[in-house]
Length: 320
Image (cartoon, rainbow, N blue to C red; front, side, top):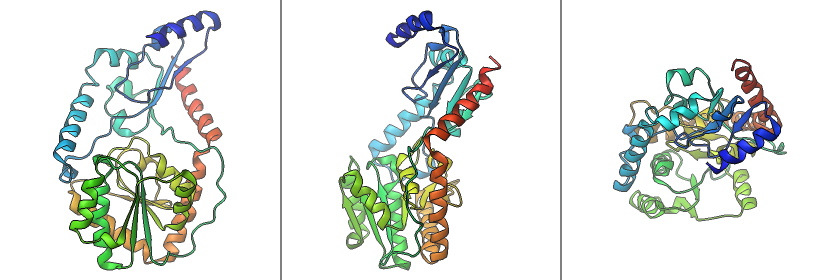
C-alpha cells in the first residue's frame, strides 16, 4: 500500500501515460496500481508452475507436503478477489510461462503474453565446442531443493554410466536436499563419478561451463532458470524437462527438452540418460548444439528484450 500511495503522488505530479508493475514477479502477489487510471502493465509474473504428480515419487515427505501446499495456493488464484481485481484492471499481463497464464481467468488470458524476463547484458565471446571432453562431463548448478530434480539427474547419470563408464557429473550448489542426494549417490554406488561442490565464485563457475559437455537441469517448476541462460551463453547445451521456464528458453538447436507426460521419475531418468548418450556419442551433434546454444543466448540481449517487451505491451495499451 505504501507503493500505491507513492505512485498516486507521482501520478498527480507527472501524469504517466502507462504504469508498469514489475516487482515481486509472482502471481500470488496482488497489485493495486490499476486504480490510478493510466494503462497498467503487469509482469512478467511466474509461480503458476507445478510438478507433475507422476514425478513426485522421489520427494521426501516434507517435499510432498510443501508441493501440496503450493498446489492449494495456486488453486486459489482464480477465486481470490484481491488478486483478480488487480489483474482485471491491467491492460496487459506478461506471464513467464504458459503454466502461469493458464491459472488466469478466460478474460485475463486474452490479454496475457508469455514472455520470460531473462536477459543478458552483453555478447559473450566463446567458441562452440568441437569435441567431447575426455572423460565426458555433465554439470548441474543451483540450489539443492526437492523440486530442482537433482534426484532425477542422479538416477539418469547412474544409467548413463552403464553405457559410458568414464563419465563424470559435477553438482554445484547447497541446500536442504544435499544429504539425501549424497545418500542417493552412495546407494547407487557411483560416488567415484560424482563431485559435489557446495559453492564457487562466479568466475570459477563460468570456468566449469567451459570445461563440461552438457548442462543437466531437470527442474520441475522453475519459472525462469537463470543458470540455463548462463550455460547457453557459454556455449554449453542444456538438457531440461518440458516444464516451467527452461522449456521456454531451450530450443531444439540449443539443447534437449525431455518429455515428461505420463512418465514417472524412473522413466524420465531413462529418457534423460538415452538423450545424453546420443549427444555424447556424436561430436558433430555436440558441436551443433553448442553453436545453437550461443545463438540462442544472443536472443536474450537486454536492449533487444526490453524493446520486444514494450513493443508487445504497446499493442495492448492502445486497446485500453
